Amino acid sequence: MKLPALLSVTSGVVCSLTLGLATPRLAAAEVCRQKLSAAEQVVALNAISNLMGRYSHLGVLRGEDTLASLFAMKQPDVSWRTPMGPQGPEGMRGRFKQPGEAPRGLVPGQLHEHSMFSPVIEIAADGQTAKGVWDSFGPNIGSGNEVGSWLWVKYGVDFIKEDGQWKIWHLQVYPLFVTPFNESITDSARHKAAGGGGGGGGPPPGGAPGAGPGAGPARSDGAGAAMGGPGQNWKAPKDLWIYDGKSAVQGPRVPEPYCTFDPKDSVGNI
Image (tube, rainbow, N blue to C red; front, side, top):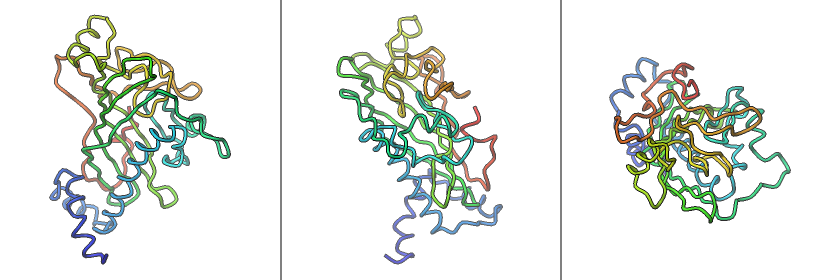
């Protein structure tokens, strides 16, 4: 397919991934002298979309210890901020299988299926970094002996180009609610507020997306028990919001067009 045809086919993808923010995109590009062509933006958007799709599918089908190639392991502040998700290259290497080591395998009876949808992705004008947010919903079952739950989270992700390939740089999960299959969301929130546990907030016993078995029980502040590599704990984001039946919904910042990466705007800056 020739490039003009490619752009005509994918132009709808670009608009949908930025919620139709065509005018702000052009304005930002002008300020930044528009270093990326339309074709380069399309290629980057496709690569990042596939990267997050692989994160979702491979974690479920092959085990989350097989995801090392998706992360920017050469970055000293690389982070995977979900329960069991460590920070820094050393902690990350401890979470993943080592070269030549067989995958640890899937846990029989476990199912953490989390679709990636409603993406908003922005590529920096310098073409070196990107930002994105996703919704994710699915069943959360730690074993065949438990009731299981529904889990809805949002992902906030920073991406970076490493050796010419797009990689996950900082990943932060924002749990919105978790409720057992046999209980409503509002009932879970009431039971949690009353100190009765339930599934009203925070990572569930089976863990959030990116978590393996034994991720620890939920806590009232949304942060799980000590998890991840040596000395690594999951950190709840400062803009964390979990459904309580009382307050208005909040969540991660939706990315806007930008010129170059600023650490203070990172999802890793919590």
